[in-house]
Image (cartoon, rainbow, N blue to C red; front, side, top):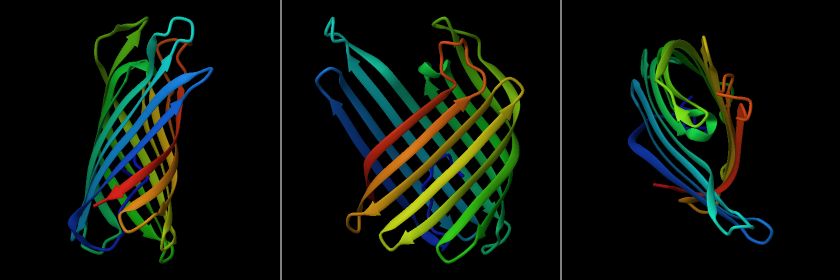
Length: 238
């Protein structure tokens, strides 16, 4: 529910939990590229409170085979924080506050940010499967880029819908998925992610993920509305 497909267990965790994720991709030959993926998560589930923060960064560069010059093809920074206040320590229902900030000039926006509040519910379907659902009003700010020129910042009211699913496949593997949509008058921004991770040892895991971001409104038709990212990373939990 935090625009990140990882989450802690529903059992009470008094200490903060954190993980760092890192991946590199290099290609040579007809096409020379360098890509970097880094992510940091921190979370805590204690009594009536559940907190989580996410920092996600991705960048990619490619070399022009004719000139030898290197140019940037992707540069995305995403931050989100959320707190849920449960009606009681073992309640399925909660009130949430969510905030996010994203910089990605290749999306047609210099930045996009959101603040939302609302109702959340967590349902456990078995010992190994549970899901979160959230809905609430909010406000979104953005700064469009048109013909390479940043425009004035603009804002509008939104309705945020979000859902996530978590499946402990085995003692060493898990599946996570999320979907969120921020519905506004001028633009609807949606994010989705699915991932499978397998433990290598008590601290390290190998993770394969597929994520997508969609904006219903972009500056011009040369900008794709949908951005996708496929990553294979190493995750260190501490």
